[in-house]
Length: 222
Image (cartoon, rainbow, N blue to C red; front, side, top):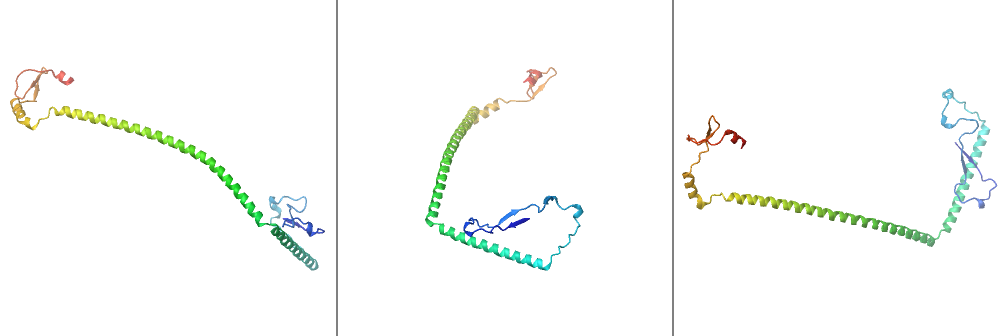
């Protein structure tokens, strides 16, 4: 609830402050004492109570309405007059050169702050870029070392493969050696069959009756 108080009685318009809010508005929590706070809500005993309608005489109602209309009109008039008056004074006091100078000073101050911030960010950025460059160089070195190791490992494997193939190539049968090799194989037949007797001896050859070779135990160990 608001209580509006008119403070313009016996006050000259020349000494009124420059504020455009010319009415004193006070926030009032309750009208009379004692009274419970507004946030307590309606009492249970008064929830369904219907307050009687106030009976105001017709003459008193008309007088109150006239006074209120007069007060409202005068208040609006005074507020409008003072608003226009002081707005005109403010407009006359404003100077374009002063406003331009204030704007330029503010702009220079903002540019100075911006330059200082840019300088700080430059130092931070250069430090970050240098650190990232150092990390990138170190990472490149590590990748180069790993690549060299992989290359050396591949060389060793290829060299071992080539040496093994060279060793195996010693037993290869060349075209010019084919006839001699056929004659040698035919002259020296090889029979890979063998038998084992009761004593555990190996007897090689499908038709060989002959000589015992070695024990089955020794062959199993091999």
